[in-house]
Each structure stands twice: as C-alpha cells, then as structure tokens.
Image (cartoon, rainbow, N blue to C red; front, side, top):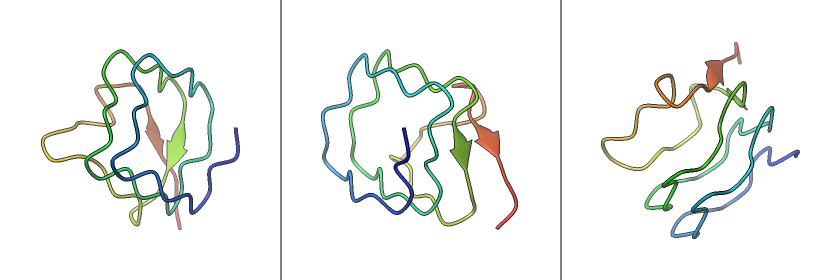
Length: 65
C-alpha cells in the first residue's frame, strides 16, 4: 500500500496487513497498531509513530529521506 504522507493519527489499524507499505511522512501518532503486520514497511525520519512504539521491532525498515 502507498500510504506516503497519509494522516492516520487515531486510526484503528489493529491487525492491518501493512507488509511492504510505504509509510514515509505518514502520521501514525496515537494509531492502534496492535497485531498489525509491518514487516518490510518503509518509513523515514518524518514518519510519526505512537508513543512507545518501536517500528524496527515491528519489522519496519528505515529508508533515507
């Protein structure tokens, strides 16, 4: 999925299949990512994650801006 720059703050993404999604510049602050598949999802330094969420542990990959 191409979610580049998407505003997904407060989104319910529980169990979402985001395998290889482009999350660069996306706002995922306060999103519920419980059980979401983020394997090989791309993100950059501008991607906003929920507090205490570790994208690397979730399988996401940091790409250069």
